[in-house]
Image (cartoon, rainbow, N blue to C red; front, side, top):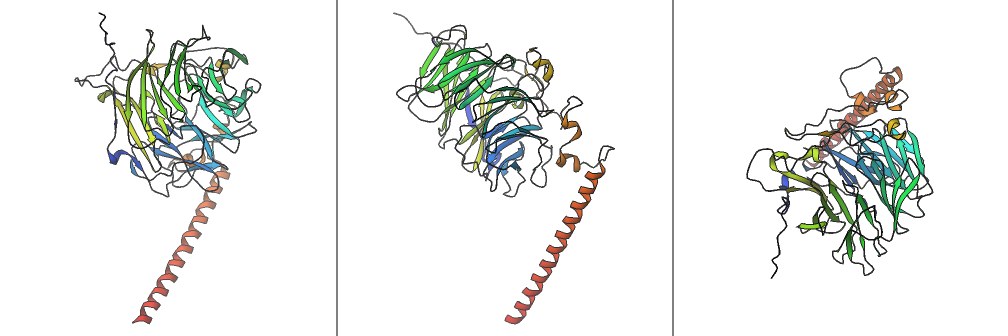
Length: 471
């Protein structure tokens, strides 16, 4: 009689836990746009959430420590003329974020370390090249300032953010709407899923599809795909009977999946989030109230179910914290920022350990904030693995730094208006026109204040007269 052996894994007992009520972000009007993006992006310094806004598109940026009720008049990042569909923080600069919108543009913003006093409406650079709305953004994992955007015109553009130039335009590889894009670990390839039911592995510098799979999942609903650390591809999709599925694929043999599992019959698209340090994939379904997680190994059946975090309320979107932003002293291996209709709830995933010492096995060296390549090096054909850092003493986010780019870069000549104006120091590069603009703005504000003072005085006088009349 055979005995079933329980598989040994240090992640078998990972458990998820929401933070206390005072550590949530309350009173946020999350965007109601029907688009399968996360609506949320987070890094060790900031939380960004796409919100409802009149007269255009906007997103909110909060310092991570600013929990509790959010002021309804908090300044927004509001430069787009139509709803924002996707946002993504730069992995090499925690103060830089890109936004994509229905207005066909991509904008890149430099966020100051402090909260600005009014809406930010001037991006550092606007990238224009798509003819229809742009719904997907993802930064290159190892090369400085390379940003990928995908639009509803079925075109993928790779930009050098610093110069505002389109480096590579892939306009003939997809025949229908692109569902998602994900880079591999060193940024030499990316995987895409498309409404034409094809999964493609693309070498962007060669303008070439190096591998392709038709119908990795048989169902008609959207498919998602992400690269694993070892080069395999993990997908989520639907069967013919509309059951949700997950699958693992080896590029050396694209005919059959290495592993295929059926989940349930819910109709929400499963968004996969991958932690290469622990080889855990987390699946968050839009509209679900649970997060499932699986460990990916080299042993059959390759995809091992670990556990499910369940809550009462469904998620409108979700943000996934990079490893640098986790609390290593509490054995935290992942943190999600779950969007409800009116709030954002952090959920902490922890491996229970008795010791307070640093757990080397949970925290191998992880990609840090320094890029391994410059944009032109990558474009010329060079590849490099991410530059790793140790989390032994915890990670301290770097101070606000402007992007270091080549001389022709527009970011050198056009520093972001809001952060630079509010600095107490004044340098020789502060132009005469900028000074005049600032003085004009002060005059305008003074006039506004004086007008309000006069109005308040008039109202007080009227109130006194009315009070006297009633006496």
